[in-house]
Length: 422
Image 1 (cartoon, rainbow, N blue to C red):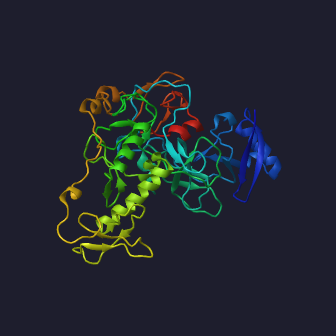
Image 2 (cartoon, rainbow, N blue to C red):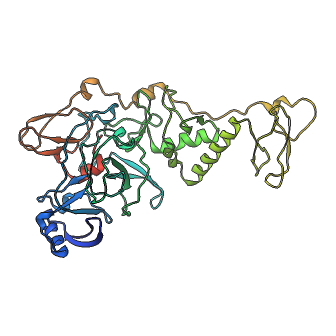
Image 3 (tube, rainbow, N blue to C red):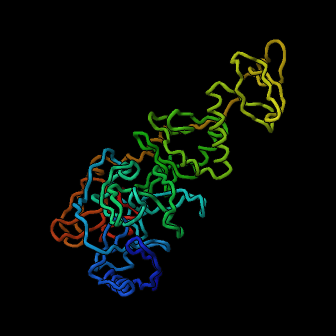
């Protein structure tokens, strides 16, 4: 099968190269060298933070329609490679009970707002944080979300001629369609592949993927139920306006320290409801500043009265509708006391969770003994290899095979894009 890949040579120019999927990198180098008038021994090819070896076949590389292979001419800069890194948090640990799959194990999910307009599997990519080019070799591999989301965690060497960049910048692309080199999507890191077969806290179904709340118990919820949970809370205006995290929600089981801290997860609501979510967020900020919202149907303008004790509020034109209302009961302005019946808060639908269901929906419900099994045999020579961190890239101490902890097969660029860390 033939494919068309984008070749960027020495960051000077780019061109398309027609290749066969059975070709090796050595064959690709020969083709590029012939076109550029250089020796194939003088060029190196970098993709996703790693230099590709001559024996690697094109079909083994996780290339999209607009993926770029960076071709560098000249001697390699010194770099000390490491495989494992320490991680402050335990997101990278993967239990022994991962379910077997023949399809790619996608551990990263994004919301594709440009083309798919839904939650999609994501591909992890890396580039130089200074020049934004992909000709960047990593000093060490990411092992947890902090390594990917926090700037300055992973160092390396940029191979661009006039760039001194030494810091990696990770980003995500939608795996469902081709995209340009500079296109990226926000990763929804609370959404995970349900490799542990955890039940949804609401419907008890075993779905894939699931959203895992950041509470200690890691309560899990299928995406359909999460959408209903968000819409119910939105209808009740029962979101929490946090000074740092914004307009957000906690775990429905009422767990401490469980607020969702990446508001792009609420994109799951869909465009119309997400627009409503953003409007409510803005209105809540206004209310916390001492403002009020015009109660007239079809208006809802935000108002900031100068006197907080003032009862008579006018939604002034031309920005407002001209309605004059009582600040206490939000009815048309009147003299005397407000009707208490109108001031009673309407009952809300609420959203409750059965404690028994919450217990069954814990992401960390597996026993410590099960999670603690961190040794697997090398897929080539069967020598036991211990996993010490969150990175899925393993190397056998005997036969030196680079292999994937999750796939239990030779390490590939597809592993890097789908589940570099767990």
